Image (cartoon, rainbow, N blue to C red; front, side, top):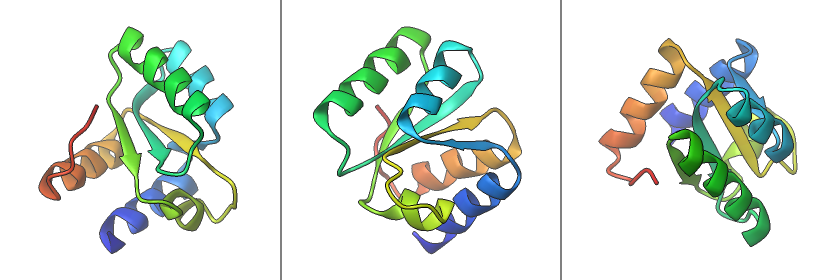
Length: 104
């Protein structure tokens, strides 16, 4: 998880990660999101809203360990984030596949 947290922090600093559920939803609808990450403690409403948008736009979504997005972004209360297409997103996807955690 430390590598994943580091990659998310790098994506945040590089402007490739958009933190926040509403902003992530906007990125999905604009076709800019390549991956959506949702905190395990996100509300059912937030999770469903993002899951429906991801299913419609065919964007993979992953449920993250509680608090990981907060630590990686350096901001508290972030329940979701989207990643733009690119090398950092590819590395994060590869890391998620190596840990064996399923994408939705």
